[in-house]
Length: 151
Image (tube, rainbow, N blue to C red; front, side):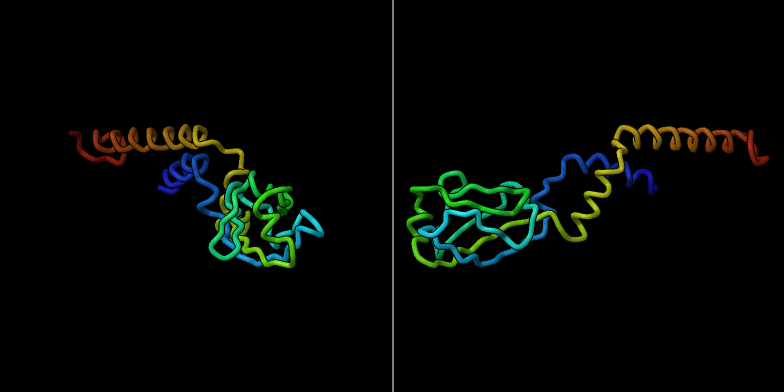
């Protein structure tokens, strides 16, 4: 049964949306675009791609238009001429909401992913084990093993 669970999990692991298992975090970053467009460092990283959202009050900024992200190093840079640059011309706190590669669920996902066992390998092993179990059950039922009566 454990092997069957392993197969199910292994075949799902390649299709898991990393955004579902990353740790969520929100922080305020002090920005002054008249002094520097960045990069501005976030607390946790690497950041899971497409999860960083920057906002001030009810205004949400657009990645690629207002800012760029270095996911690996956990930084964002303000795009020159953008609305975010205008809105942060003086010391302004920008709300950053994102998911990063961290936490217990992420570690489990990473460890399983790095084993090198593909779902095809696990499926082949489980098939052999289940076939052997089926053959053994037939032999018992037919009385070939265990001294039972035949069918």
